[in-house]
Length: 289
Image (cartoon, rainbow, N blue to C red):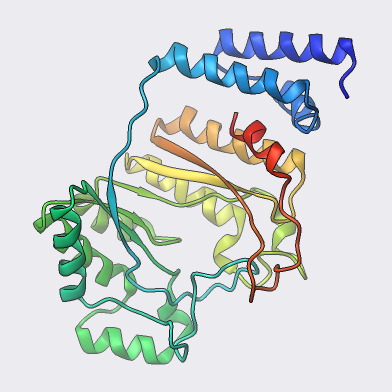
């Protein structure tokens, strides 16, 4: 339970942050360690609400989209993931372009504006059978195939948004003309998550430096970009603050961050992290704020 001095300090810190439209790192770390306090968390949440009202009033926008998981094959093996499948799994699926066109048509007919292309990271590196399938379709990489999928989306009247994992500058340049925006979850800047027994041990594309570099390159290309943080995958409060400040720094430098997703981890059956404890539900709104 917060002391009176803690509550007063929290109110002062939040008030200053709202007025300045940014918070200092030391203050953010101090608040971060107190988000489970039932007296401190509401102060933070009300400050976030006031900041939002000052920026854009009570307006909330939404864009309906159709989800197109172009392929759920992935070379990474994150300990919490249920999306990625092995090629021999009955649930493995790579959509043909005609199937993409059908999804786009269905989305357009139900009032969708966007086509959200979500897929695994460079599965052609890991799986020979998939490389052979791509080659048989006339493509050298998943990124090349994705460009064609996005063209189908545009031709069908939707605005593609691509989240395809790590992409090179040439790949992003090829995708830019057929995407309204793109994205990559930063997830965490903590390198310890790549360590033995950690969430990203078997996920080379989750190296924080690699992910930050792609954010920077997208900024240099002036691509509107969605990013975000995962909560509760083995990081601590300071790591989370560091990740959020990294996102703020990227937008300060390039001005291209259109959205930051704050996503809590929930343990799922069949994953290596099925026994891990996620963040307490009560703490999550504090991090969103």
